[in-house]
Image 1 (cartoon, rainbow, N blue to C red):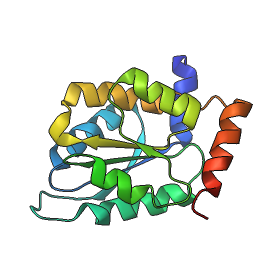
Image 2 (image 1 turned 60 degrees about the vertical axis):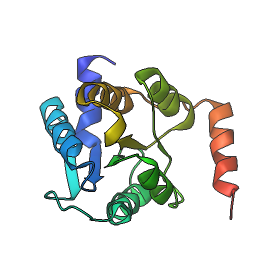
Image 3 (image 1 turned 135 degrees about the horizontal axis):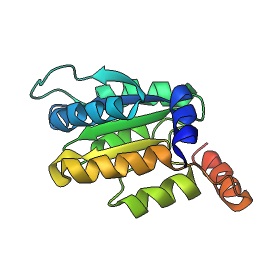
Image 4 (image 1 turned 120 degrees about the vertical axis):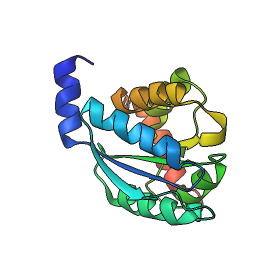
Amino acid sequence: MNKFTILLYNLVMVIYIGADHRGFKLKEFLKNELKEWGYETFDVGANSYVEGDDFPDYAKLVGEKINIASDTDRGVLICGSGFGMDIAVNKYKNVRAAIPSSTDHIYDGRHDDNVNTLIFGADFIDEDTASKILKVFLETPFSGEEQYIRRLEKIKLLGS
């Protein structure tokens, strides 16, 4: 995307971000990156480091927002392993969350599968890598190709 397209895209996109105590430090770092990049960010918490807080509380807050959000909005959730957040937030029908291992991985997730919520395991990723993955997540559009739309429609029918 060129800078003008990214600017317009950013004007309508809201990023909902949340983390438990194990993801708190990375969340604060990524919030600063998002601000620097010009994104509107809504932090659902934790608002301070509270050892022993529960990741499902933050998954719920982001999941509720993304479940009813526009197609441009995104979620970011961070806990220790990433798995708890991923399991919890994927309970919401319109949430498509993933834990990517690289920028190429999240590119495919956005382009092909319309991933709308990014999950990080703070114990397993450094700030620089997380920042690069986040940037690709935000700048990669869903392709909208017929085969991917068909597959997403089939996923919606699972478990219903």
